[in-house]
Length: 329
Image 1 (tube, helix red, strand yellow):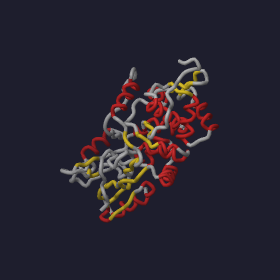
Image 2 (tube, helix red, strand yellow):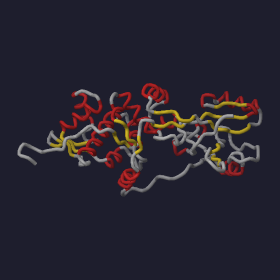
Image 3 (cartoon, helix red, strand yellow):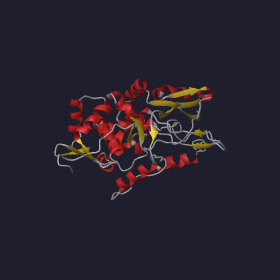
Image 4 (tube, one colour):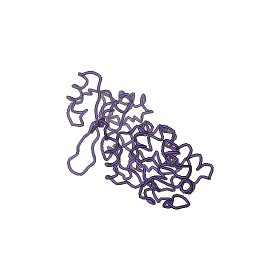
């Protein structure tokens, strides 16, 4: 402490902003993306410039916000006022004490996170581009991600599918890698296959030759401009989030059915489990997914039925837990 006041390490605008996907998604659902993005920018700047001490000069923070987010002085001051008590706390009107990742994660009702994305700071300039960057957190940074539907991204972020398409088109931060089709197998008749495809055409159903039914499911997209963060940082934050809290996460896909007989029928049906054999159909085509995993060596099959843990009905389809793509013939 000097005679003229506290001395701070000068903050610099970082090259990348580190954001955990679940945090960005929660901020979007709360329509709080601008203030959250401001906190993420200043937090990354503090980590680079000040070793993450969290105590920063208020005027210096304002400079980082104006430069990194491309806003004026008045807008920067408004963002700092809106984040007061949620993302930072003012001290003596001259300093800002940034809240840590664990505190912000708990405030966003998170119990665990996945590996952070390093988002180029240029993607924080402009509200539309900033929003597109947060939506792109829903995708992997490489081409090996799971198929993810617009519907699922909408559930995670609250951003409608039409807005997702517009953001992708205007800003190009999410790149389409593979279009995925689910093969529902041969149906009893060509007429039945055509009828189902027509009835559920808005869900991506297509009828092919030989009474075969397909559905265009969630495509594999990548956040092409992002880089993946460290797994150690993810583990540290998850440990902090779970401290003193019961673990409520689970591994692997889950299949939910109404009634015991439906479960037994599905387990006995070889076709529903992706194997050659019986032509019987134990479930409605909306539920009967058989997909080939295109990996080297022996081919494997996964059957994915929508898990109601995602808060939707069985008839709406869900995330397919697999890699690669089953292609239409």
